[in-house]
Length: 184
Image (cartoon, rainbow, N blue to C red; front, side, top):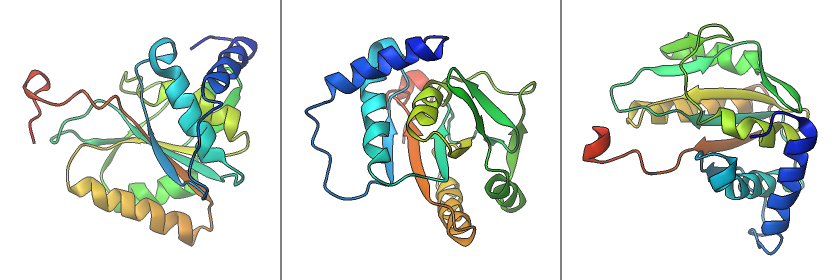
């Protein structure tokens, strides 16, 4: 994505124009799947999905699941700090991540110690643009049954903390099969 807020905003305006005829369901949406192949290729789809999630209801936290992981991978999460975007920083929702880190085994990342993976990063400007004041929980969980428990815990913890939440899964749905070492 572009490096300046003005350039990002121009791209977003174009993406929204492309999606102007979308007819999302007439109900409040809680989550969606967004592609991560880059703004040039799939930015319009990701932008319009996240825009539809905004709807009329804001969010206190956006939970973003992503990364290129296989069934045996560890879970990853940035538990504190902030993510930088051209629109400004998105703070991590540390109460939620703290609870998750106490309940599950995560490889905790930081701004200077992280796994190079772009699947969540590409969504960050859209999240900041449409959910200006929301915090974020960005994590990578493998395609394994144990990850369902993490998803359920996210919902339970957010409800207990009285956080209005939106959820995105960042994927391009193609990193499976024999060429990627994962066959279900």
